[in-house]
Image (cartoon, rainbow, N blue to C red; front, side, top):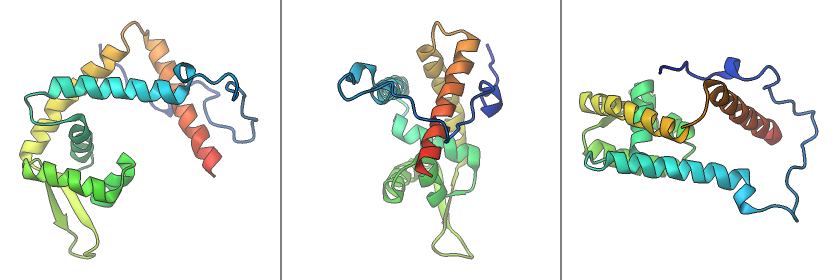
Length: 174
């Protein structure tokens, strides 16, 4: 079943964060339990997704930590190392080490900018593009397995709620 890509427009009408709203008090110091904590649950879901992808990638020479940047580079083509680090919310030095591994596998190439030596562009090779295309079904299958039993409406609602939480977090940082 092909589902449309979720976007802000698929979120509920009241989805935009309203920084003027008072934050609810769903959690208190006395009632907070890790098994009910959104942070714990979100991290556990991500860990489960990572483990499932790593299991499916055995034999391909890639890990989840490598496939996500490869996928993002293949979609952005000719991005910079700094932009990739921002997208991955990772330290540029860590991204550089990760790119070293992907470059050793001949999946990406880095090229220094001819106009600004501080800027390093990164793009996939033909092999990297082909590998990224192989990864797409693995990622989709893994996400769908984690959404087993959800209706399309529930999936859209979940995406909308998570987008709303991200917007609330961004508004709180402002």
